[in-house]
Length: 394
Image 1 (cartoon, rainbow, N blue to C red):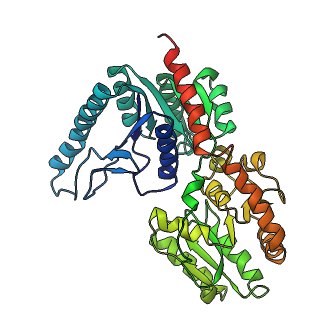
Image 2: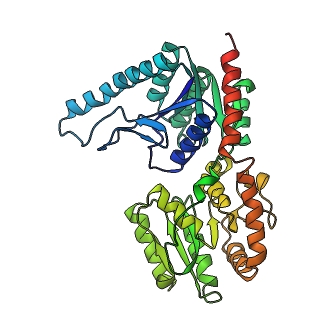
């Protein structure tokens, strides 16, 4: 039996938060005797378009190394990837019966294609929902109607939905989706990634943030300002920021650091591989998760937070969405109100002044990554859910 993880929301083996979640799904399924095949459907220009990482095979059916200058040829390349995907899945199904296609996409055309593949190969279509389905359909009457129509069609075509939060489960149910199709899979992490991490990447002690670097969504500016308030109290500590940001945001971050006169105390990392990020995370003295309070935060759950917990280091996080359903201030993490610089700076100071106690709290946080957030535990649950779908009408 096999599961195909297919879509255009992630890359593999390097990538973003979605890539990390795909990794945990794939590893969990594999260790529970389900073969996994990953098909990255996005139009990525790459030198290597297939391979095997940690026993997990992946492919990019687009198969282009660089952008062609001719419009017609570019369209032909995009069309051919559909045929290549069909052939790949047919080969997989012939040698290893596919019990489900796990679809990751926001694009309606990709969704319809995934549904057709599931029909052709007589398998179940189980979609991933890690953010609000209407998050990109909030502006304008017509845009909102488009989003509702798209959601209605897609939620009826799929056989199951893996939702990262109860908020999303309740949203689907409020729109008339059968509860039997919905399954809650919280943020997942592989804690073994944070073992055998190598030597310290920096010679000084540091507070770390690793994730998307934005001001509006992730409130990195709030963290920088909070750090500036406590740096004179704890001069031995630096702030290290790692993650993706565009050039404009990078300039804004550098400008803010300069204005606050902490340029020598803040390190902004360039692009790091997935394993390098793990090394920086693991050697931080404190890890901080900041995020704004908005619709996206209500619906999702930050994967970086569970990775932070897996290190057993003290974790400070804003209290948004369902974070407080799992974490309790001073018990297994340190919680602060979102968009509150005073609260964050005070909590940073408290943790640094009471670091022995904070390490005990961090150890309690890690215990969650061996239970509720553990990839293997959640993989077993997902396999049970998929089997329940396959037993219907069989």
